[in-house]
Length: 328
View: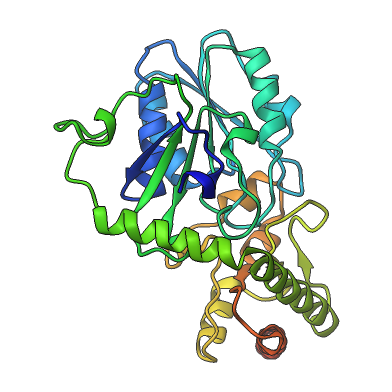
């Protein structure tokens, strides 16, 4: 695991039940001081935003940085929000809805210059298996990952903690994980995550090439078949497998159901929030119109699929959207 995430020999890897617990742990550890300022992007996963909202209700100063219209967080926008009492800067490495990559290393340098005492954290759950990942190169203090994102079973994740950084435990009651996570360790899960990491690393280049080919082919075909459709975050660097597709004149929830009937699983917003009511906070933070927010679906491709899968999905989107427009 250490080599897989690019950690140094003395950096600590703390196994958790997943990225949600890992992110909650980091946020809670930084929010103890009554005068703490906590800074994050407005497009973070709810497992970062919700604990921040709780701390805000307890009187902590929480500042959320908006992305540009393409969904990317700028280093200057982050550093401009920092105060001398800043305890946490948390900026995700890649957005789970749009796939847009953030310049984490640049943000970390700017944040460290503006707030030397702040803990710098990145939620990197979307990176493993999809792009190069190096904890040491990112320059952050803590990085969180989730095993199921790259082939491990659900229920295992980790926090990578830079050597010399003190992190308060979130779960108390035992000395496990260097006293940073009490409770009996999920040894099977940790071993499975390590095995998944080895498997991904062995086929990484081909896996990424195939995902990017599938995504780009899908976006080309669907652009030809569906008038007015557009890809959110298209002009920024993105994960190779993710497409956030705006389909005008079609409600995203209806399109999700229509595609499901054809055996194609997509989501309206984040994959892990399917069935959750309410618009995408990510697209709203990007300043997208209500129509665009309500008519965007998230489609992601596996690294072991054939090119005809991308064609099939694009054709299914075209058929469903045309039928819905006729019925409107």
